[in-house]
Length: 54
Image 1: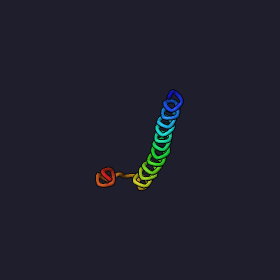
Image 2: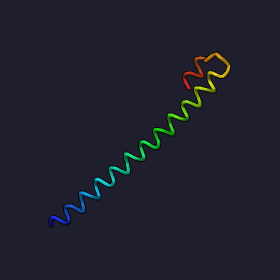
Image 3: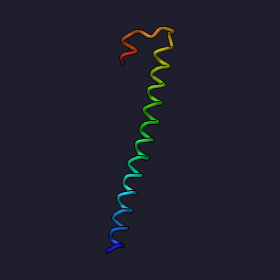
Image 4: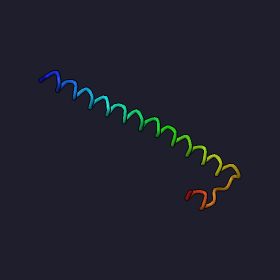
């Protein structure tokens, strides 16, 4: 009985850890894309309101 509880608990923790790692990978990618967009918006020296909004 205790062994089953331990296996179940391990599965839960493992699943949560995988989810958190995936979030961090996606967050890094999102930040890189946003940084690239900011560089393109600032390329001409002027950021128009519609560029800022996007």
